[in-house]
Length: 356
Image (cartoon, rainbow, N blue to C red):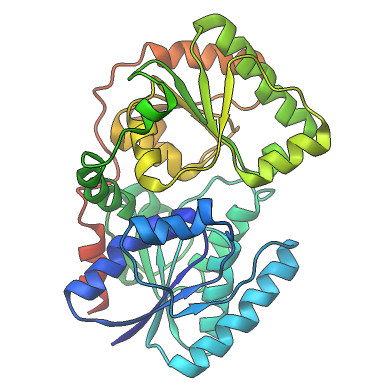
């Protein structure tokens, strides 16, 4: 069996790293294809280095652009790779333009597609990620659902039961594998002068939030109120997209917001695991904070990770300032005793078992 593993963004690199490891463990022939959808060292290259992944066999160098431009360049590039390499199956992960392009290029060439993290739904078609994940699921031959709830969603959409595999989420594999490495590193908390439980951690990058001046202003006003209420610094490894929009909108930074450069996965795990609380619009960070038992406030009106809410580790605040403060107050009192809904850390093993 020859496998093409497609990645393009930080979450995909992290979540596919256990699958790459499983290929190497079992001597499965694989080719690693990187769209380069994320294209700076801080949010791309550093993850390959820290996770011990080999250089991609193909780097398409796509970079930024409109959804049509970006997806079109990826589609053409991946078609060329798949024609040359002739994989038996293409594996994609998540909900980005990279995922859609990889699945579509493979389908057009009659190559089987495996979708890691299938069955997630926010039911909000204004999100480009929702469109990508729905289309990818309905092109895929192997649908690796992270939870039973995601598997049932796929069944409800008419996908055959024999094509669905409930594996757990590979983020659990990645977090557990890399937490062991964190202990041997210098502490980013010490470097930043932070103490355990003495700060909030923020991530914000979603197009529907940061490209909308009203929503971004609502988030910042909410953060300002949170800082006034609780008096803790809010550490923000700022995403390049958000930095660009802040400058364009000429927005004033909230009190207590501490901007830092993007950090690698290992440093981010330290920041995440030691935070008093996480505020985020990221799906992956919702999962990670839930696994690490750190309370999460999600700056969105919906989530494709409802399991985090079901177990009590997350709450939806949207971008209304008063709701952000109220939800932060609620989660400050959350007991960190919830169970991990995303599996036992053996998702990559189950994925490879199904393929083999």
